[in-house]
Length: 626
Image (tube, rainbow, N blue to C red):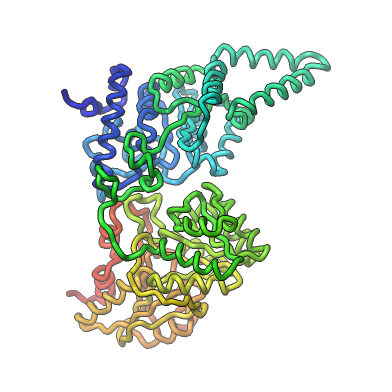
C-alpha cells in the first residue's frame, strides 16, 4: 500500500481519515521532512515538533477560508506538505524553489507572510478585526512558540486583543516548559473544566449579577476574584493570559491527536479570545534532533543515520572568530559584557556565557529591550557587545537612535549575517544595515575584509568611547593567519591594497577580496585598477578617498548592501562636497528590491557580487566589452 501523504493534495482530504490514519500520516510527514532537509538543509527541529498540531489544525478548521498565521514560520514544513506543495517540497529554500517560510504569493493557505518572531498575534488580530468589519464568519488562529512569546510585540498584541471585542484563537506551542505529572494532570483537568462553554457563560453572567448588587456587589466580586486568583496562581500557568482577556485552555499534549482535535473542536465554539497551551518536543521523531534541537534548528545538510553534518572545514566562521576573540578580550577587561536576543549559539556567545556567566545576558526575542538595556549598562561604565543578526537589528532602530547614539553611549553592535544570507530568503537577508545605521549621528561603522581585521576592529571598538557597529557576513571567514596580539585600528583610516592608474575600486568588508580578483581580471583587459579597503563607512577616510579619486578616470564603490543610502552613497556625497563633482562615481551594490532565497553563491553570482560580476560592472560602465 502506498503512502497516505501521496493522496493528500489539500487539507480537506484529511477530514476523510480516521485517527489511526492520521497518526500514520504524521509518521510519513516526519520522514518526508527529514529526508528532504537532510539534502538541502533547513529548520528541522521546529517543524518536526508541530506535525500533530499541524494535522489537527487542518483537520478541524477549513483552510484557507479559516486563517492560520505561523509565528516566525520556520515550523511550517508539514503545513506546506499538506497544502498542495508536496511535489515541489524538495525545492524548499533552493533557487527558484518554494520558500522556507509562509508567503502569501506562494499559496492561498499562507494567510500572512512571516520570517521574524512575535508578529503572529498582531497579524491574526488584524485579520480578525477585518473579518468582523466585513461581517464575515471564519476562524483566525495564531500559532506562536514559547520563544516568540518572549518578544514584547506578542504581549502588545495580546493586550490590544483583550480590549477588542472579537474572536481569536492563539495556540501557544511550548517546547521548553517542563510540567510534572501531578501538576500536569491537575492543570489538564482544570483546562477541560474551564473550557466548558456552558461554564464560561454561567461564570460571565454570575459576575454581572454580583457586580449589580447595590453597594456591596463590587466588593464581593473583588474578594471572590482575589480568592480565585490566588488559587489560579498555584495550579494554572495561564493567569497572565486571562488577565489579558483570553480564556486559557491547557496545557495539552501537542503530540496527542485525539486530544488536540477535541480541544480545537471545542475551542471553535467558545466565544471571545482563547489561548490554547500545547506542549511539544522539538525534533520529535528524529533522535539526533531530539537530543540537540539547537543544532537542528537551522540545519545544514546531514547524514540521516548519524545526524552528522556533511562536510568539514578548518576555516572558522566570522561568528566563531567573534566569539573566541570576545572571550580573549573579556579576560583582559572586566567591563566587557555580552548581550544576545535568544541566540547565544547563533551569535557565537556560548563560550563567553560559560566563562563569564555574570556578564552574559540572553534577553529573549526582545531586540528593542536588548539595545536599551545595553545603553543603560554603558551609562554605568560597562562596554556591552550586542550581538544581533542584521535583519533582526532592524527591529531596534529607534532604540539605537534614541537610547544609544543620542546619548553617545559606548555600546558595540555586532551585526552578524550582514549582506547575502542565502536560503532563508527575503526576510533574513542582511542588506539594509549600512543604510539604516549610516544616517545616525555619533556612530562609528566598520566592516572587516577578513577575520584578523575583525579582531582588530573589536579592539578598536573597545578603545573608542562611543557607539560602534561592526558588520560581517554569514559563513566561513577568509582563512588568513591571526595576529597573536590584537591591535586596534585608527578610526576612519582605510588601506590601499593595490595600486593602479585608471580607476579605483573602493571596497568594503566582504567585497574587498572579490575586488582584488576583479582588479586582476581588469588588468587582463588593459585597465589598471587601484583597490582600497575602506574599512570604515563612518567616518570615511576622506583624505585617502578624495586624494585617490582625483587621479582616476572613474570611481567604483563595492558593497554587499543595498546601493541606496549605503557606503557608495556616502562616497558619492563625499565627492560632491569635496569639489570632485567631475569624478564619476558608480555604485556596485545590491538592487532596490527584496532578495529571494537561494545559496549565497548563486545569489552573489546573480547579483554581480563576485569578481566576474564586479569586472562586468566596471567594463559596462566604461563601455568596454570583452
